[in-house]
Image 1 (cartoon, rainbow, N blue to C red):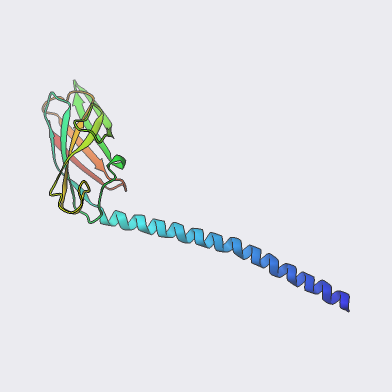
Image 2 (spheres, one colour):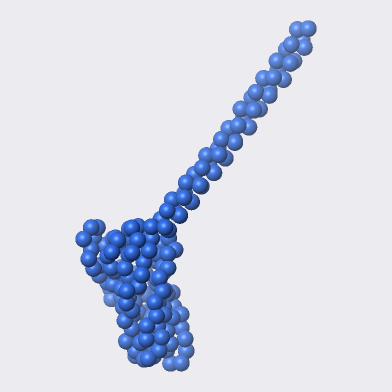
Length: 169
């Protein structure tokens, strides 16, 4: 009788220890899922609060310079300009080009680059694009733009919100 009690006690103890180790892995998985869900919710919240528009595009035919003015219509602050995408589609000498310009913080920009030229109505945080503020962008494409052709500009923020505008050079 004593041996059977010892064996059953050992089996029960093994079961409890096995259960504890199994639950510790489960709690790590639950915590990981919770963190992922929180991160996803935070990103969705930023997307809802982000809105930009392109107020104007100025592209003079026969040059490679493009000036863009974007406005922050959302309540999310925008400052990670190196994560922005500026894509310009234009025509040069009968060929259509689409360029994804590279960010630089030095203006004037070189061919294939864009830079933040000036902030307008920048009253809250210097060099951060807050609600109702505008940013003038200096962009330079690699080729001269043909006069009287369409120039399409696409700007996307660091969290993927996109604004598009077309003008005639």
